[in-house]
Each structure stands twice: as structure tokens, then as C-alpha cells.
Length: 225
Figure 1 (cartoon, rainbow, N blue to C red):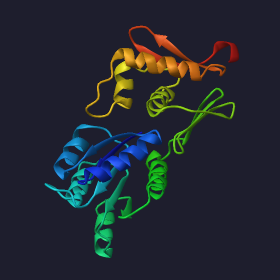
Figure 2 (cartoon, rainbow, N blue to C red):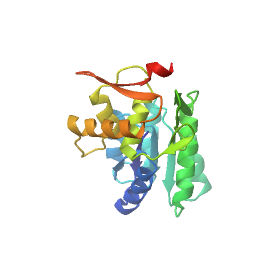
Figure 3 (tube, helix red, strand yellow):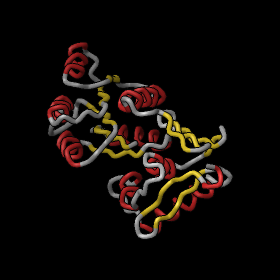
């Protein structure tokens, strides 16, 4: 799951990004409304955390542009403004939630999980293949009901593979799912993450198969079908 944080205070933005990355999300940050608008026009995100007091284009205007383009991602307004009029205006423009500063990180993470469930719509919150269970909302992976500890990037990569069980996911698609702005991940690095995932899935009935020159697929072992 990829989140965009549009917050003009770099310290707050990085604090939020750090907490969300620890929970397994891919996070990008922008500090002006214009940059938020451009990012949303050119990239796919699963959730927007939007400050109202952004320079160069305020949060309300960003919200108008997003909904005007027909983009339906969940949006949480994050702001120091606590007037009823501002809340009503934000919700009327298409925001899904409203969190007033100061706030606790635990509350923000709980609201992110709630918006994730809402954004998933009819999609299953739990993906399962064989004995592998992947809880997309609570960010928990288990095999035979035993939890597996994954890094944020391993989690994002496994999610990309599970979305197409038995289908081939190219290296470029995996890079897009785990790479944040300003980062470069090589094909060799992808192979390292795949190797780590394979080791953590050992003993399960699920295997990562290499399709040489194409990418990878996640499949149930033939002997257990």
C-alpha cells in the first residue's frame, strides 16, 4: 500500500512517514500543495494524508483537483484548524476523515487502517494462498497461523505477488511497489528481497517461482495441491 503525505512541516511529515513505514507501508512526502497536486496526477497512491495549510495551493484546492479528476483514493485531512466550518467544507469536498493536530500516532495509524478497509471496497481484506495468509489491513503475514516477520519492502513485494497468484509479476512492477521517490532499486536488489522471502516461506506450501527474463510468480507447491 502506497501513501502520500502532503504536510508543510518536514519534521511532522518525516515523523508520520517513519511510523507508517514501520507498519509496512510505502510512503512519499511532499511539502506544498502544488507538489501534492502534481504527484497525484502522475502517480498511483492508495491513501492521501492531506494538511490544509499547504503553501502554493491549500489543501482544499488539492482536494478539489483530486476529486475533479475522478480519483477515488481515501483522503484524510490533517490540520490544526478545528472549526466546524472547516471540517464540513473538507468533508463536502470529498475528504473521508479529519484529524486535528495535535494527535497521537496510534490514533492516526488506526484511522489509516480504517480508511484502508474503506478503500478496499469489495476487495478481500485477507489474501490467502495455500497455508499463507496475508492480512492487508493489519499488516500481518502468517503460515499455518504462525506469524512471519517481514520488513516493509518484503511485505510490499509479497503483497504484489499475492495480488496475482500464479501470474507473473515483472521486476519493474515490484520496483514500483517498494521504491519511494529518490530511491533506486536495482534488479540485483530485487533478487535479494526475493531470496529473503523464499527463506521465510520455507516449510510452507507456497513457493516463489522465477520466470527467467520475465519476473516472479507465487504458487502453491504441486505436491500439496
